[in-house]
Image (tube, rainbow, N blue to C red):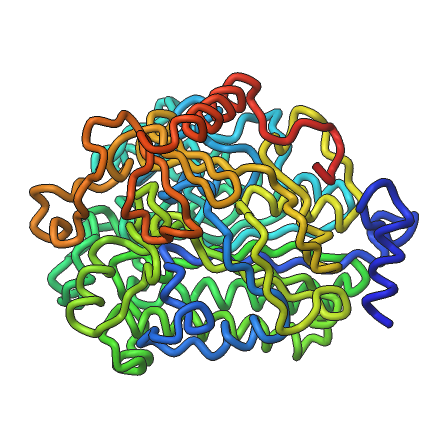
Length: 519
């Protein structure tokens, strides 16, 4: 009966837009978007039955909703993926769209006039909150009022903490923000930002000798740290902040829908799981970090239950790209765990392991439990999908690469919603690929990210190149999911078609062609 009700709602509006009443703030579902960091397809047990790190809460989330098996981050590294998630536009389309920020890098990749996911929801009456890692760029200023956009220790030393931070989450549609500028325990500024300020500035340079020592602990830059910044418990602080937001919101505005974007540190290196999770996974420090991530998801789900809002909350869980090289190499070698399984490549690579990610969606009464979808999906699609849920029409100059997945979610539509998918590797516009059906064309040579030949850690995973003189790569993922046979010379017509389609999409500035929210 609930499925029928959902489908009737779909049919009432043009086409596939779901509205639940005339009052923009009545009847809409709450939305919890959880984005993990560097979590691979093979890191989650419900995607990889050989995973050495148990993920019972994520597995339970999959059982209660829909598991996508062909979902992709928009890029193979953090910043461009997060830009695309917030805007529904591929990052290579904007200046510096291949940038990965560190420290106080900026300015924001999001232009002031660009419509964002939280802005769209705010216009529909939602309370919006961002907790965790931002990493889309922002602007700090020095004592002379000059913007600081350099990277490194000296840039952090120049910050005037009496001034507001510009271009962060509260300038792009979030009512509140608690988190960090970039990677919480990796980059030069180890301090929490609250809304547009750093209330407790850093006072000293971090002492790395006090941090854990293991193969997954060597990704921490020697920046400045605030006295209230716990390197091993950052995710627990983020969890507490999200629980605080949820509790306060339900207490004070129980009839107003909320959008909470919770972006974790886990499982980005360094793998500093909180001490209480040490040894919990039986798969080393990185396995413990995966275990902690699963725990965080479980705690957020439990909070929704305790507050009585779980039944009216749409939950989306995914990752910003594939697993980091260090974690893949050492987890394979030391623990028999493959975070990229069954795909070739890892973070930064344009091969599947660099961008095929877990995507789990739960929406009680609308998304069938224990369901699976093989739809070709990008995280850019979250914006158009949510627009359909709340009946928001996307203008032509917004969410240019976002497609509405709602028919697949509520009706398990099997016809392809996307005709093709674009992917951006570490080199930005120089390393793009396109996927149509089983065919995947990489408009470049090599991985597009990591260097395998001559790299002592990665050369063991280098594969022979069947077409070393080809300027690109073509794979059939149905017959060759491991991307081992480059068919560039054998299928010239497919190469021409996909290359033309890619070039047309680059020239047009979009892959969503209609100014409606179901395209």
